[in-house]
Image 1 (cartoon, rainbow, N blue to C red):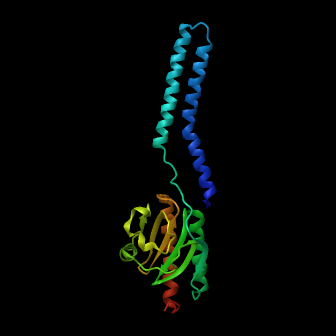
Image 2 (image 1 turned 45 degrees about the vertical axis):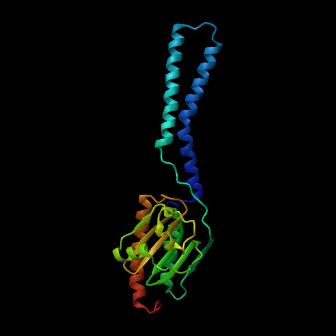
Length: 230
């Protein structure tokens, strides 16, 4: 199991950028060397002229390949620094096992995905807030959250700024870039905020779904047997 942190992401992004620029650099260097060689040659032979022509073609192909890579190769989305304080808040009257489960799940999400803010909403209450915290500590379900609860299907808002319904996520940092709402049965929602748009991969979504199913099972088995949330 690997841990994905911001330094690793930046290092990978830098390597990819260097690889995309490599053909342009090689083609440009080859063209310059051919020009220097042509200028410094006192007598131009037919064989050298043919070699120079071939070299110019190869340099042009390399430069064109590099330019095409700039357009085709996917680039990492631009990340922002989320506005808010780092924190870890748990509902105090939860059973210890539930607290441990929530702490474990949120830690995995924050260290193994692009998630920067985690909120667990269950049976009308906020059980956990962790990561970069928003200003509003309470969750008032809007249309998007209501849909997740009713349909019991996850919703991934790849670029939150494009959705008019983003105003309902005032409990997340105000500049949150992407949001996943993962249902916890029909009783709650696991809400995740990212600091870059279109940053959750399919693998991340599978991670979130698996952890959400585990949390839903734990909460339904334990919280429904107690009166701590009443």
